[in-house]
Image 1: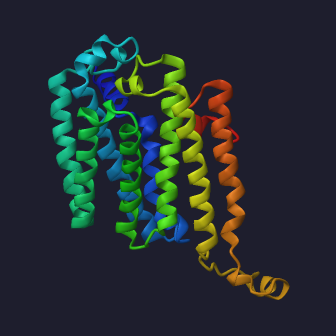
Image 2 (image 1 turned 120 degrees about the vertical axis):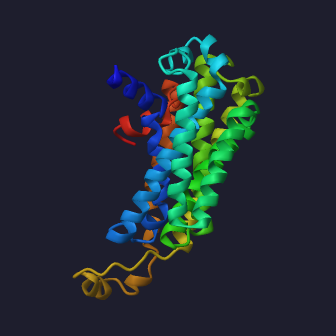
Length: 288
């Protein structure tokens, strides 16, 4: 019985969506410090803190939507809506985990704590109001990704360039608009109230717009940002073969990979109506 209860709790935590919190690593990845043991460990602690915070937000959302989910053809099978986890148990769980997450966030810094509070408040407002309104719903999702990126910046001390922040912003808007498009095509407006205010051509426009702005933002980041110098035994050789080797804009060679990733994501949307579960798409699709 306890094992079943634990399984239902983990199901309510949306474990498959924890991948979103990897955005916390943005600062050390693009500063070239991913392999620095101390920075990697502290960023991992921040990642785990946001895993806890996001789990709280998912359970909180299920509590708020309890009456609605019970009547929903798909969501009625969720642990809280189906009664596998009692509403009182879920409320107690949210309270305990929220206090725990906020206490942990205080150990990083006051700024990190404030960011954690903003993250919870954003998800609370999203569950109560924001998800009901077209465009505002996907903007809220995008802001939550930016908060994760800023959290990584705070704990490492490495500044994230503005064009990279905009890449995170537009990239998450692209993924969110693809998700709404897939939901609209497959289910119509049955699954979300905000879908009543969307039209398919509008979602096509948003998807194309955010795909374009993501590519432009990343391209500008790659062009303007000099990659961190990594010492290797071959540096001297490359400097002789390629003049100004260390000053070249090597990050620009990553642009085609970003373009391909977005194009592949769009291909799966328009040819297979996939995209409703981005976390599954990113981890299961081999080309991605």
